[in-house]
Length: 393
Image (tube, rainbow, N blue to C red; front, side):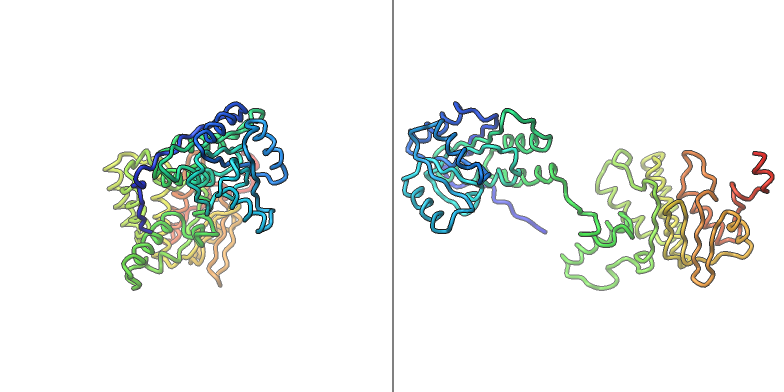
């Protein structure tokens, strides 16, 4: 979706000064007393209800003169309302609270935020809490503290580094992108969000997704805007890596365009032409890219011969539906292959191909399928020898 960013802050608004470090009673004491001396108030966030009374004691030890109030989600509505009214009226100097304050609170007199155990909070949550202070022209301070007796996880350190780095006003989008990098994008390409991607493969999925987005933006819904149904219905699955490495085609737009062209290549001649063009432009292909073109050749062959499935699983090749010449059946059966003429399903153990280390399974399967359609299937490399020859090996 298109998105607009508001990057211009209100007049006289100042960035919040951020401090990230271990919990230190002297630092907390100085922060609270500095705020009280200028007539302000303090949020002290301790996000555990069962230990919030201990947090009150720590605040009292740091600044005994401060008037302290408590707010958390297990209090009744009346209790919360009374505490917040006292805080807004200035009868409370330090509000010790859980993250219940992260939304809906707008108190311009509160310009110091102290969070203990900040390593437990998410990056977006810390950024939201930081937004509770600095809501006027007064300089605000935010302290993100963590215990000195525990080791921080790598993700926790990354979150704290991010909140310390992105201090400028209007940095919410950068924080959100950093949060996405740290946490990951979830199951973006999984079955929960992307449906049949495992069935069509990434290249075809990218093409279908791109066209769906373009159609939604343009309001198009005609069949001419979609991939040919014959290609969309073909499933080609191999365990080998099939992608275009960034080191080979560095430009992202060029890679996506090549993926799209391969996804639409419905004949082997089109795939071969793309292979020649790519090799001429970028040089010799790495194995993953060569596998990508071999896979496209298999799909193009399947499109020409009405095959809907070419896949490898559990050490076996499955092709369905396919016509197998009678002359080829003895060789396939000697390799423990099975062919059901009624459904046109062929299941063939991979040992039939007798591949050596480094040889491409996809290329071997494409050669086999081509020979199969031409009626020139070669005998098995592994199992066609007489039993006596195998015993004497």
